[in-house]
Image 1: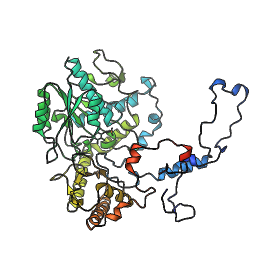
Image 2: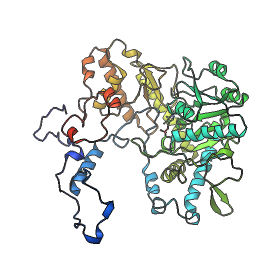
Image 3: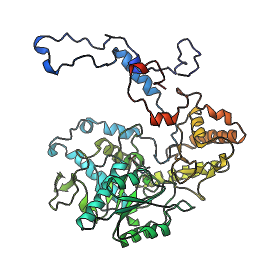
Image 4: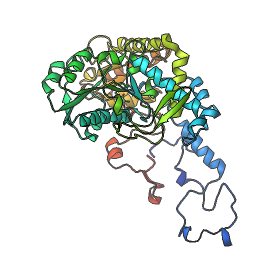
Length: 502
Ligand SMILES: *Cc1c(COP(=O)(O)O)cnc(C)c1O
């Protein structure tokens, strides 16, 4: 721990140094008094042979440990979270209130269908609005996140091609795509072929067409794309891929930039996941829950996974089996992320259709404000206005000795979670900043001032300032290569006093 020890305790006011839980407590200390097991109460052969190394702490020690750790988290409730491609927007508390209603939060997924009619109605209503907003005829609700939705969509494409006796081999993926796109195609057994991006940041339509052929199962294109731009050739791409008998998967993670204004179904797509946790709020990041329903075209709808909700007469039913046998099976235990369905529906209903159009309008406005306010110090990666996120390359840092990573680390000292860095890969030293519609002009101005100040400092030749940033965070800069290649994930007694906590 290379923190400067300026106080007797080693803590700095309320910034408390928090050791690992295994470094705290003392042997024999316990939060509960259990009687010594004896006689019949003994578990016989199920008993452990020895202690398993759990930490010995009292209840207040444990509560303090986890409360302090939680206070070291930076989240959207603490401050501006400019991470691009992730849509870290405020999650209205109304959503939380509804998701926590006992009639919803206390449901068990194995309850008889007759006792969960309200929950099924919520799923069915949300499904309805997702279809309306996207202009698509069907939706699979169970995928647990965006990546899982991609898996669902590509498995549906594969099932449809196999049912037609035409399995095919290749999937074309934009080279600016999120890594989950090629990973999904590869996981489904396809060879991935990259489609280059033009100087303007769009899918290169000519190069796309050149790669098409009778062995292409389909294409995966993100719209708006990860360069923060609307793909203008969607209809031409759809016609071309349908022309060779393939399917069009759209990565809809950035739907928040067009919701209420563009219906992806009108652009000719066959499948698209919607990250409910991005477009329709819900806290995420740090492993928090995701939900990635996939809207499907009429051609792919018969291949949707099980189960799904149907409305017959007055009752909602769960279809667990298809008579035509075309579904590729279940994607997940049970029916999807119920708490997130409730939050997403609450978000939609509280905004209304005009409110949702305002969400996308304000998100795009905020991103363009940021782009315009930084464009004289940082170089925008592409000309013209953007959609929901502003993308810069690192050319204005050339010869300063300061890198994109240095700026990100110095931003931590400024009190911000850094923006997305080095993604998309097609932009050198990329800085991808997504303000979202929920940030006020004041909070954007403060962030812009910090960014401007840092870039100006770099240009003024003060590279030394950046070298040991962050200075004021609980931890200084990690050796990222060692942290990635040799992570210490498990506590070992010999690491207790050493560098492991770094
Ligand atoms: C977030 C994201 C994904 C993956 O979604 P998860 O919910 O994180 O699995 C895929 N594509 C793009 C463009 C994304 O931004």
